[in-house]
Amino acid sequence: MHYLYLKEKDYIFSKICLYIKNILISLSSIMSRDLQIHKASSIDPECISLPYVYINPQFGYSTDKILRRIYESPDVFLKPSAFPNEIKEYYWIQCGKPGVKEWYSLGVLNEGIYFFYKAYTNNTFNKDGHMDLWVSYRFSDIIQYAMDTTVYNKYITDTRDQPK
Image 1: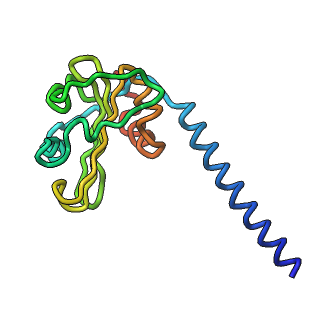
Image 2: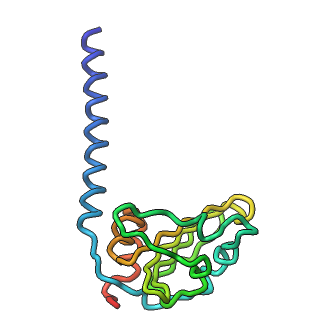
Image 3: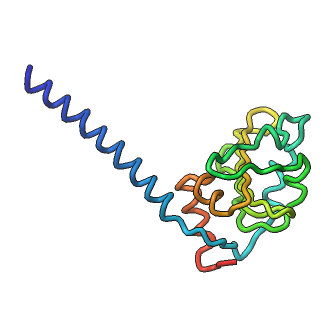
């Protein structure tokens, strides 16, 4: 019985160590991110237009409702009509597909505010969709705090060797 108890403790300890290791890897990934602006060689704004159509209070997706705060970033005042109507330049877009792949867009608005947008739906946005928008005056905040490691790696892979 004592032997089983020790094995269980070892198992729990190994799970805790693995969890801590994953946290440290995530933190080191955030701290070692390339903060230079990279731009994809080919960007098709049309492929992100489907979720943009639903950014409208009548569908439940006003800019205020999808805006997420970056606590490490200075406050940003974003006009309700600024996103997605006043996009100055895209740096990267990932085309999505309902139920399969998320939509992402990264760029800068006319007012010099950087943004990262993410949308997903299983079917249609007016039934089961979800959208998030992060904004900052600092591009580095978007890269470090708005993107998770998987999305950041996809962005870097898609824009590698193509600094703005």
